[in-house]
Amino acid sequence: PHAIARAGIAYVPEGRGIFPNLTVRENLVMAARPGVDGRKEWDFDRVMATFPRLGERINNGGAQLSGGEQQMLTIGRALMTNPDLLILDEATEGLAPLIAKEIWNIIRTIRASGIATVIVDKNYGAVMALADRSVVIVKGRVVFAGTSNELSDNEELMHRFLGV
Image (cartoon, rainbow, N blue to C red; front, side, top):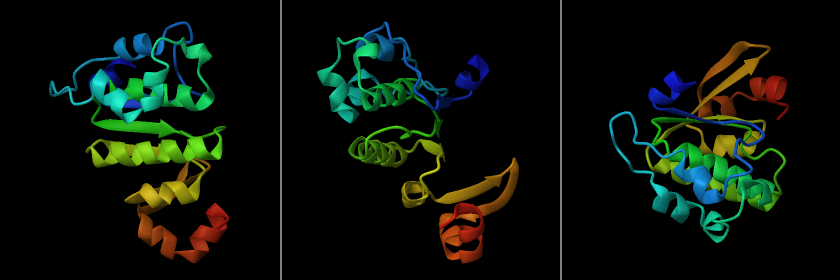
């Protein structure tokens, strides 16, 4: 895991990944480090500006946060490592629709900041609204790799593998 982090890759796991006994501040500060090239674009203040809800709960323990707040904290911790690549696994699973929408908007902001983003998710519509490229994997085999527009235009593939 440390070699992956040193390569500039941050991972946001399905089901969150916070330290429940640490405060929001402690969870974020313990993850802080410069990126591979020494840059520190994502610092505590920028994460707080991106996730204002966390600022309201800064001294609360991780276990006291809602599921959506825990997910925001997990993403914030990943950003504190100043990654070149952010991998998000089911970033909105189990969250209320309004919170999920907020998370998708935050992911859009992260992408706009220049961080390459890989999104693994079942929410086809939300992912396609963000993705430049798409890969469809079925039983460990890549059945499609191309632009998101190419995928959207392929009705047979959409119906067969995505049920759309």
